[in-house]
Image 1 (tube, helix red, strand yellow):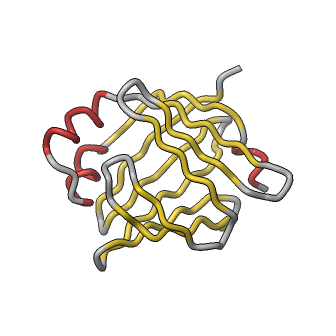
Image 2 (tube, one colour):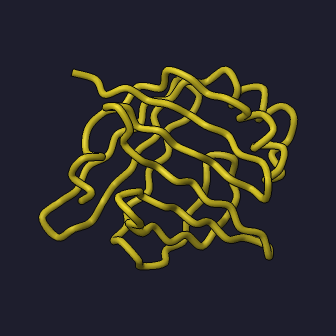
Length: 134
């Protein structure tokens, strides 16, 4: 099921991301950079079922490697230390990050050939859309 996410995805739109970053506690300077950055998302999976997701931009490159439904420690692009679990729910890749008693979800799905990432923190939702590179 993860197969449909595998590939290199280029960000084309980002809506409400500043409000989302504010909601998770990202400082002003980092938000300014985050709002201007359009990272590529590179998703791969090996024979053992380990998935890697790399967010690559001129500002910063971060990568996480995980197996579905297995918690792992993640250091996010804004340097939060989270306990993260990624699962497959109704064809969506759902990433749940927990830190300091808070939780945020990033829900990724393929819709109309695009990868749509919905970042949720409480009632704040940011939507980032990617197209697959040939």
